[in-house]
Image 1: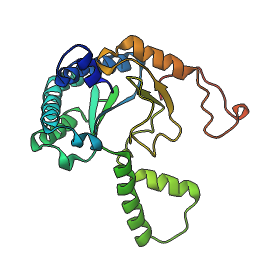
Image 2: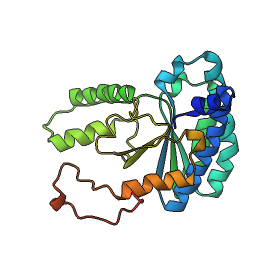
Image 3: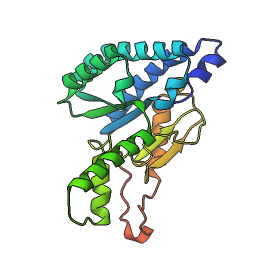
Image 4: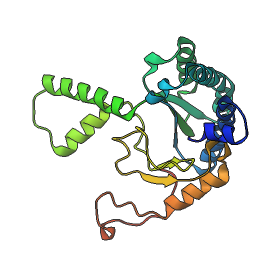
Length: 236
């Protein structure tokens, strides 16, 4: 969700106003995901690198996240949406940690859509943490594993083990990189880049990304002849 700061600068506003407007785009994306039958919507809200930003901006972002959770969770429950946060929570303010835990408990049994917020997250951190767990497991367990078993075992130690790998990654504001986001999990993800700044991202832009995705042939290393083409369903 990129471009909040540039959006604000273009309008002569403080950066925080861009972040506030970005919350409206999140609400729009969640609503449209439900409409289209998407089962998992992941939002990269705050990276490990974002802690390097000015302290005043980080503080505002944390406060904004707390208020957004408080305001949106009743709607999530109303619409049967589950809320989940992935990342290094130890660095988050205690108040925010408490609100996250409370929201996750309250929405745990909801099943229409799972909204995953990546907060204080780093793909490298995720891989390193999983590698340590993988090493400890192999050190205390004997037996040979196949390549597929090793892959599945390692994936089970990632922080994203409870959600599927992403089918489609949308990045706004013209940036064309994944910036330390789900590095392992995006091995076969389809990428879609748009010039639209995140605060301006609405359903029409979401649909454009879904339309582009539906035209992709996902081969996963196989030949086109080996893949049975589908209708491009968004329900993955």
